[in-house]
Structure formats: C-alpha cells, structure tokens
Image 1 (cartoon, rainbow, N blue to C red):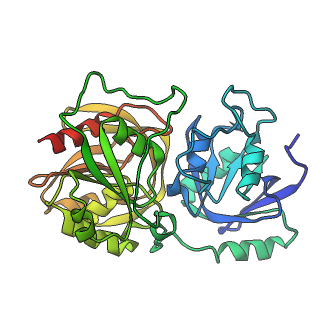
Image 2: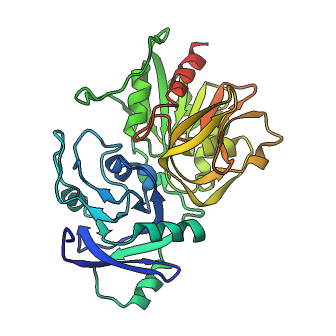
Image 3: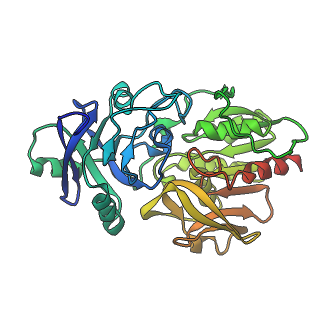
Length: 379
C-alpha cells in the first residue's frame, strides 16, 4: 500500500509518464533534472547535498526511509534536492537516532516526492537516453500539458546554480559533536600546527568541513564571489575549493578568482572545485550523458597503481584531451568510463579530485587526500 493514497505522476521531457503516489508536500510540484543515484544508504545526506540543487533524484535501491531522519546526518542546513523518486517509502522508521520519518522530512521542507514506480525502468531510460528534465505532480492537468511543462524546466547547460547555494557572508566553522559518530581515521598523523584554511563555498558539504577540521584546520568560509585580494588579505595557509551544483563553465567569476590565486597559496579542490581549477588552468569541461552519482564508483590512483571505491555526485566532467598541453599530471582515472578523476599541477602547490573523499555517504578509501593537503601546507 502507498504511504499516501494521493496519485502522482512523473513526466519526462521525452514524453514518458510514470504513475505512482505522492509523499511529502503533495500540494507542490517538483521540477528539475532527473538523475539516478546507486547508493544503498545515505538518502538523508543525498537530499541535503547542495550539489543536488535543481535535480530530482532517483534512488536505485528500492526501499528508502527505514532509518528515518535525524539532525546529525545532514550535509547542509536544508533539503536541496528538488524531489525524490523511489520504489517504496518505508512505513516505519527504526533507528535510535531517528527524529523524523522521511514523509515528515519532505513535508517540513515543502518538497514533493513520488513512490510506487518502477525505478529500474526509469534508470534504464536515463542510462540509454541521458539525464533529462522532469516534473512530479499530484495535479490533474493533462499528460500533454505536463510533458510540455517539462520542456520549460531550466536546462543545466550554462546554468550557474552556485550563486543560489553559496553563503552570503564570511563565517568560521565550528565542528559539531555527532554523538560519537565523527570519523577521525588520522592513524597517528599529527599536523605540525593548526592551519588557517579559506573555503570558497560553491555549495560545500558539512562533512568536508568536518574532515578538514579533524585534520587540524581552522576554517574560514567565504562566499563564491569573494575576490582573490579579499581571500589573500585573510592570510590563509591554504585555500579549499568546494563541491557545488550546475555547469562549472557558467561560474565565470570563480574561474577568474582561481586564476589569480594559483601559485599564491596551496590549493585543494573537490568536485566542482576540481572542474573550476581545470577551467582556470585552460582546460574544458563537458556535460556527461547521465553523470556519476553513488558510493561505489571505482577510481584508479595512477601514482601508486591502487584502486579506490569512491563516492561521487557530478553531471559534468573535465575533458581529458584539453589537459594535454597544460602543466598538470592526471593522478586519478575513473575505471568505468576513463574520465578524469584527479590532477596535480607540476609546478604549483595545487591538486584536485572529481570525487568525494569526505564520504558522506560512502567509503573512506580516499580520506588520505585531506592528509595530502595538510602536508602541502606543512611544506
């Protein structure tokens, strides 16, 4: 039986319509780019990841909501995903930290989701035809009008979403006690000193800030449009470029700022930060067919010929051919499609990765990258 008996539809811009049942804010519509995530766990972190702004997330794991929602396992101050598509919402929540059901969580943030559809079929469509715009609705408008409306949803190509999610003023990060669930994994590593790190906020996840803080960084988070001179006036030991949503090539102001910062301080970038660094160095990016979203993506570390299982969330990638004449070494490659997953500058103190070493959610194979950033500042 559905959580609610309110009928809902998911329409894709290619004309496909799925029928199911709404959950959450059934009086609202959800619209955005429909994408799929292959993670088995971590739906709360996925929903609150600012990188999912403007996207409706299809969960390929069929049963979502069994552990409920709590105040600790969030990656931002609110839900950023535009909607969620699942096979079945759990009727119960069973976890000692649970505070809300997923139904209550969607109601709290006024977001509509849909359950009761064949998410396997939907994922196969997205894999074969690519991510596409879609709408979830409980309204009674005609199928024809609904499909027409999907084509009015804003396109990710050329879209700057960073300005919508970045902080509006400078602040310092204070790590939270996550009731014993903070993962240190420092393995005896002790930094030589506390480092002041400026974080350029393009939609940064809380767990990235937690990891940097655990490694001994005092963090100053600044808006995405902060100038290079204002950043350097803070006299940081290093600069971190965060993850974020949308088309990296549309964030021209950040690209120019990064150009001016390269060589001035050690720099580490993750996800969108990786793409923006590549653009600032003279590379190119492109929109992928359906992107990488999940916590089980294999990546090869070309420096030591080891493989890592990684957490990923991106729909754009760096064009490997655009890096040929640049002073960079490609350090990591995706083993599924051979796209660029990491690079390091040959001369400057700068490196970046496409995936998420902070693992929220996901494995901790790549946590060593935070240590590398510390060592770059140590040196």
